[in-house]
Image (cartoon, rainbow, N blue to C red; front, side, top):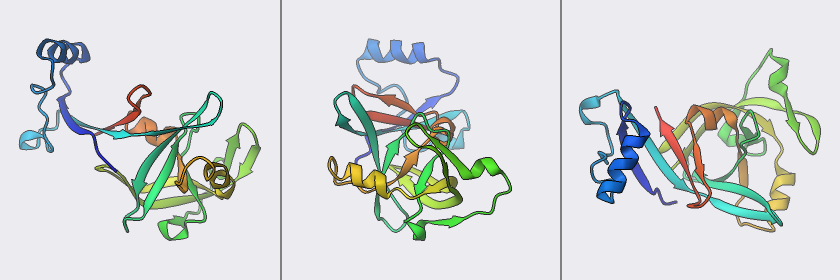
Length: 188
């Protein structure tokens, strides 16, 4: 997996200022490209951009895949699902999560466009890494994704580990660039 860049932007800079500076200079050399914020400053926002694989399952039916890895370095492949409110994890990958007890009935249901309501289990995924972004102890809906992997094996060698839903996409203020086939995560 190749990480495209790390960018630290002072939060007080406006996006139009950044665009003008980039256009004027033709590069981002003046935008403080560093791995860590200077002197532990808290007004810096880290952004990482990672490559996406775009798969056309049917004519004009595109799905976005993101490569990741678990703590033991096992590769994982994730569908970016901008329409899902929660992230979903394959319940068959038992060594990477634990089941959680929940008294909230809504935690146990997942609505699918094609399938109506599906019963799910709530779990805590221990660790997944996307580039330099590490996500620990993420609450997820646990669903058997065998049917999803049967579909994807025709189009990709990836084994789908889960779906990144709105909970993670909003938390990291993700931005998808279809032209460049990338996704940006803003790390607080």
